[in-house]
Image (cartoon, one colour):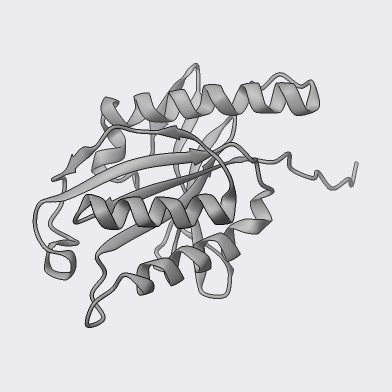
Length: 181
């Protein structure tokens, strides 16, 4: 049968890598004003999985994950990523970022991240923005893919995503009366 399936809304998350807490708190405030109440904030995590950002942002970087109460349709994520790029530019100095914001979403079956970089496993969305499935949820666990970033393979990160997914499942149940997988 030829029927389109309209997706249910998803849980907006942001993975944020930053140099200092002041910039993080300012960014968090801006994100809340744009996307609404934050319903999850991870503890501070030292970001020492790669040196990819060190030349641009400096050493001794940190990461946090946040998620937002208001669920969104997946087609909104091009504009969400573009807005996050504007925030990164706001805090940049001499074309070097002091904060990196990676928005994405969690639904019942996966974690998706948005990016400006193309690669074989990424799908072009629009306006220079790509998406990738970073983790899949099956048999009650988040499972890695061959292209999953090393830090996202760690149980420390997956525990965060389980907590956010549980909140998402409650959001969907409360809004639509649906149970997630």
